[in-house]
Image 1 (tube, rainbow, N blue to C red):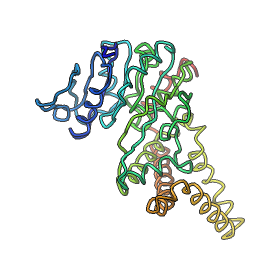
Image 2: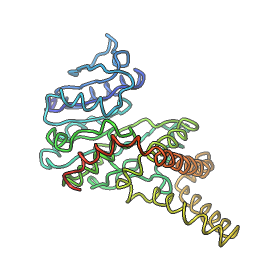
Image 3: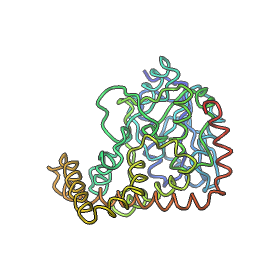
Image 4: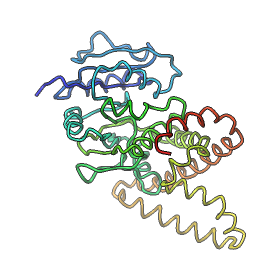
Length: 343
């Protein structure tokens, strides 16, 4: 085919040059090409070597290093020339028909916001373990982290991250762009929440599955999990509506009340029973990796540490959010403005 499609690909750049170059090479290998690829980030991060042989119309936007990815995406979207906006991260590798599938789907389904699974297929143990933890139904178990069993699936607001999402430009404008003030770990969920309440459909296609680098084990991955839940906890008193359907968060909240009561009236027997049930559940959830002995033996401990990081990260963040409620005043005003059409 080798067509130039009416698509603007927007990439917020914040990592080292290697991941960005690999991302651009994967875009260059697509059968069809976008009309433009907009790289937005600090100047040093988006410098490309003169020897790079890539047949893409690349445009550059420079920003301050501390600016969040949502600000970068919004600024690039304002200058984008095309009717279809595709957002990916700079550590993503796309399949060769990625852009063609997006265009074809949005032509027939203009009110869809579409993406695909983002998984890390690297076989190094440092990445295999975090990937296995992330896919596990006892931790996150999001659709976006698993192999999609069908060609198309309508998903929830937590299953369509901004590292691989596309939509019509008018959809992006109607929703109000990405929230530039909310935490980086919540901007995709808030955007999707508004979209669903305005009648848009969130869709995941198996053909849009991408390679997305995960943080390696051990400390980088576990610290990331702690940090994400800490940031979510800080704004949870205001944005609790985004997590009423999230089993893990609801279980954490329930534990604040049920935990002390069960210990008070049941003592060590309750703790022992819970420990046995938890141990069995973790082992059973790890059985799919039994043939990879190293992964199978370390996964239960990895799941346990992840639960600890998530629990205390969210708890400490929630405490800070409650005691610093005055710091949320700007977000309160913004939330009313962004949610006013359906609340």
